[in-house]
Image 1: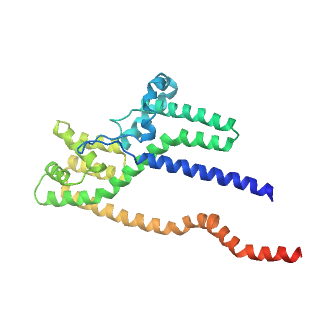
Image 2: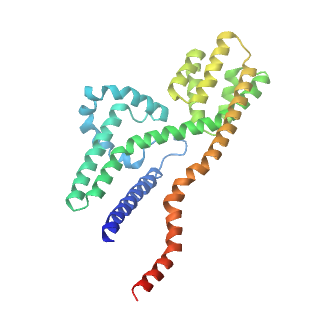
Image 3: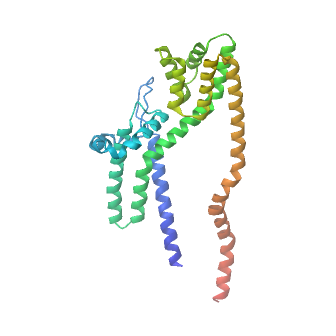
Length: 292
């Protein structure tokens, strides 16, 4: 019996520690340094900001040819997350190295103290945290853009059908909407056009910068309408209807997937608990009858 309880206890301890670390990281992410009311500068999670002063010590390693292949896609991911004005690929790699070094030192100390599983879990969590945070930020940004896009298209359609041109409609909508990831990207594109960049090129840069499928489809359609001289009002209306239909189809898909996703937690957590509750009295009575 002890041979079974020891691995189970170790596994439960590892899971508990991992959950505690993830909860701590999530809590630290939500802590923001006090800033001015109109300030729109994005900030890294505080757990990453703590290691930013150490990045100059690792910049020489981050600039090495070993990381050359990963710098370009990493820059693209940082831009997709909206943090290109906060951190670049070289500094992000240096930040990962600093965090990994700290994690290695702590893990060695924990392993030496006689808790190797805890040390390995801590090392893995801190090592993969920057990449997980970046991926999670991109996903949140893309979901926000995906949700806001149909409403913006509806407003653009109404404005254009009322007689306004595309840029004037976009400016008026951005002035009245609450600032969000979609608004940030459209506002940046609008300013680029105001500064003299061609509208087609500004929209292409928007597609390349964000890389969100729905936004890319809409912008490519607008680019084609500019090149072919198609009515932009009808185009925006069609794109809005298509996005709304995709939203309904996505909701139906998630609803159909829910029962399948529930099988694993039910089998892992609920069924064993039910079996223990129902079977424990029977086992106890059987043991009493056998050992009388």
